[in-house]
Length: 319
Image 1 (cartoon, helix red, strand yellow):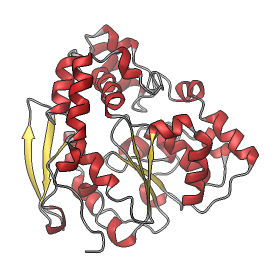
Image 2 (image 1 turned 45 degrees about the vertical axis):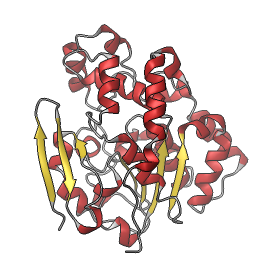
Image 3 (image 1 turned 120 degrees about the vertical axis):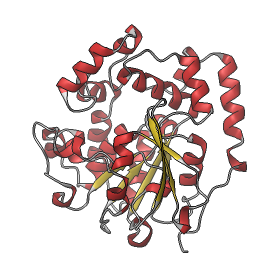
Image 4 (image 1 turned 90 degrees about the horizontal axis):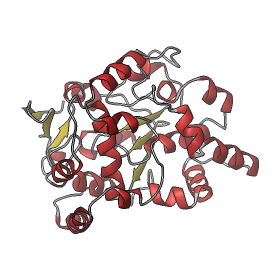
């Protein structure tokens, strides 16, 4: 059974978690939303199946678009089921399963255990907090990353939506660089996943590559999952994944899957820009940070991220 060191930061709104297991003792503290931290023991003890597909990535790195691509390929292009059930119902988030099984008007299943193989499961957790059985069962893991500057701008707009007080961009960027936000530290998060790319059950993708060459990403995912994609199915997937279609599917009132909750959060927000940017799919472009991020922070984040290689990271899955 895993053991953790826990520090509750009430002023910051997150819980800092350090996994004390021998395998993970050199990995950093992770700042998690309190509800996620409370569910962590269940996550670590989660029963993994060989046919599971875990889709991992930092919040706002493009996992939502990618999960639709992965699910439809894994499920032999069952577009009827994909259209009938919303994404969160078909693709649960490991650390917040209630969004998939309790808040759905039309549940796809009542629990993780009821989901049929292959299960596509999303997670925003860092490597060291994933289920212990991942490293023995060795299911497939697809990791998606994004330019940190675009990632943090999108992250800012998401958290601003849920904040009861306005968040100011430069203050938010300072917190990001200082590892003072939920799911940070960011550099270690990304680096430790990328260090897994040497293993055959791990596929690392980027938001930028998928945006530039969706056909290539479709073929990479299909090959990784042992599937063949026809020319017609490639066309259908590409049409389904068009930004305009995704934006409509994940509409303004579907952020949490709970309309009443989302409306309440919107009413609480004091920042009109937050309400205007409420759509889950906001812009969907590469390099959008250039329109919003001061050059000072562009330079700072570039310099800060370039030093990720000097951090303490990595481990041997064969241990």
